[in-house]
Amino acid sequence: MSEYQYYEFVTIDRPLTPAQMAELRTRSSRASITPASFVNEYHWGDLKGDPTDWMRRYFDAFVYVANWCSCRFALRVPHSVFTAGELAGFETESTLTIDESFDHWIIEWALHESENYDRFGSENGSGWMGRLVPLRDELLRGDGRALYLGWLAGVTAGEVDEASLEPEPPPGLSSLTGAQQALVEFLEIDPDLLAAAASTDSEATDAAVDSDREMDAWLAGVPVKEARLSLKQLLQGHSQQAERQLKARFLAWQRERAPRSAAFRERRSVAELWKLAEGAKEIRLQRVAEELAQLKAEQRRRREAYLATLAADFDRCWCGIDQKAERGIASSYEEATRALVDLAEAYTIHASRGEFDARLHGFMERHGKRGALVRRLKEAELWR
Image (cartoon, rainbow, N blue to C red; front, side, top):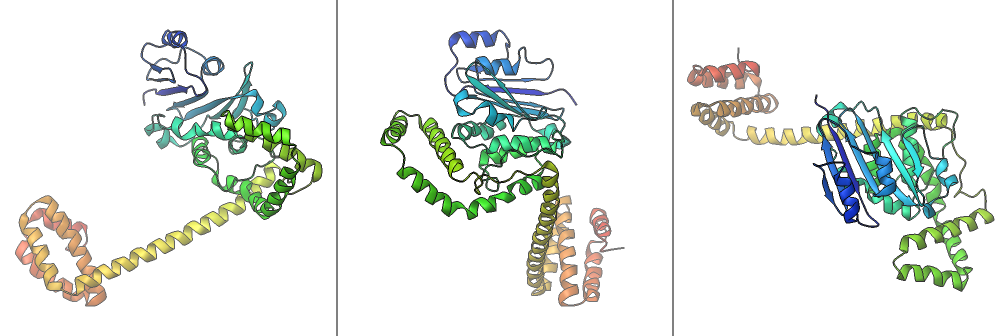
């Protein structure tokens, strides 16, 4: 297999300047470079630059895919979105890493040793950016599920000790957004482990009504000056910043009132999550078996209905098969053989196999010299 690497960078908050585009052009003569992106693929050689450094200097998002079963995705977000303490609990050895520039966090998710050779042997990486980049807006609005998924990918990869405690699980793990689902696929997170982590969502659902009441109580006490400031941010187009600040104040108010409330659940160890994952796997396999049984039952029902239509007029069926055989071409022989297989089953259910065999002998008296047809009937075990 030849070497293949795909690099894609995009800007979101501000376009590249002509000078920056010229700088990037000196690193590659073949890349597609626009004010909003840099895209290149390599079948030999490599990128003449450090992707993390490029993220610090130029770009807001980065996707990398290599056909040796490795991929990376990175986002640059302002420092104001998270504190260092909030991010630290999610970092792993290499699956979720966090770097920074003067005024940004650079968050990177990675998969280094996939065993899904079919996936990396066929995909070229070009579709991932569009699916994953909405995660940036979600992070800017204070949605931490992508961070938790990165930590969970580290658990899947064996990077987190079983005695370690999980970061506080964010609500909504059982109802991921499209971008978050794409991240699960990108990182190949164990589905049973994800189900285990999401099991706390039921507690959050039970507390939803109380949370609404708490929001009403908190909003009633928000000073007019603070409320006007949030409204002004919305009017100025800073909706994400306003949302983050409001959520942070509300969560701080909740902690002060009820530090042990359902919104701040006890964290589980990695060992406990894997144990829960075993139970989730049993449930998943049982559900898959039930769905498969239902599918097979439906297929059988349709098959029996179809065979009944054949039995309603056997003579017409034999006439149609005769016409297929007389065409004397390979495709018609294939069609005739499939039709005879169906007809044999219809006779078995609605008449008798003996009647079918008698009619087949008559058919072979007419067409037994067609060697290609006879060979197909023998392979289908209809004729000796």
